[in-house]
Length: 417
View 1: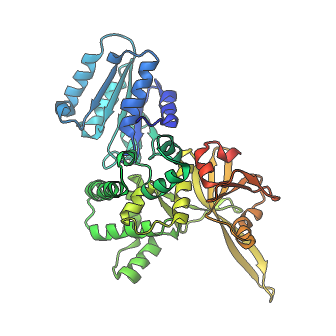
View 2: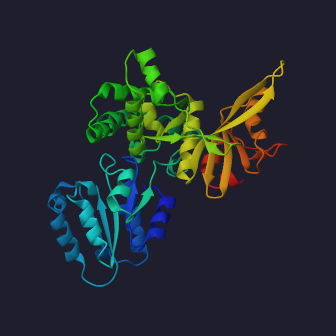
């Protein structure tokens, strides 16, 4: 089964030969190695690159243990270069290579070598790319499977695929599991044995129990506004534990750097500024979120919101939570202020979209509630309501677009419809 990941492959192709180290980052098990060793390898062969000019090393393979020595690795690569044609060096789990920064920077001095690497996000995070390579690294961020990628290899209907996706997420190896029990067991095991130990080991977290409980709180409240101070109060009032907001802020940063969660900050639409107050946190893979709670809280409406957030991020958008402030007068003439929320503001360059996630809109009152924030925004950017119902694009008298969730996810041009 070959899963086409054309968006990421196109990014690699566009960066080919740019003189920088192409660093493929993302959550563990999201398909980084497959992208390089299978999809990109096959692409290079298809454009006529000789297989001998593709130098691949999986450093987590025990048979390559001697190549974890920096001098051995440089000698091996230089020994493979026999002519002046271009060579493509692909190193997987490069953090296992001693002094890997020096090795990679040394490779940049070889004119006919193009370098691609992946690394474990326990020691090779997005923030590290900036630090280690000082302008010589070019990051390609890869996510778990989008619903569109998931459905492209799914044997079943769209609705059956959605049921599977919102329960078990988009980690590629989930597709190899045959039963719901196998899928659940795989995800729970990955969370307990891979993701959490990675974080605890890397950051030397001593309060493992509190860290675990923070994960539970975030998983239980996806799409809810929160911040470290609010979380600290939650620990005190519900868990009867004292943990400082400073510590919780660090934990949240660790989770974001490891690609387990993403953050959507609040943005004042009319004031055109960010608000330094609660943010929303979403899980990068909804299957891992569900596994964290052992599949006890699979509320489709909240999961739908998380999936839309992830989809927008996969499409390359910066995603914020919109706040629209309305001022009025009460019966006594006193000025009143009310805040309306836009679930997502998706921005990419000059493009901007306002998006609401609405599981259902059974009444006129519900419709009014969802579109009210849009009607208070006086710019011309597109306003979209994504609903769970299986509908194609509709546009109402206010110019607001409605589209069904599955259609929104399956059409990569759905924001433009």
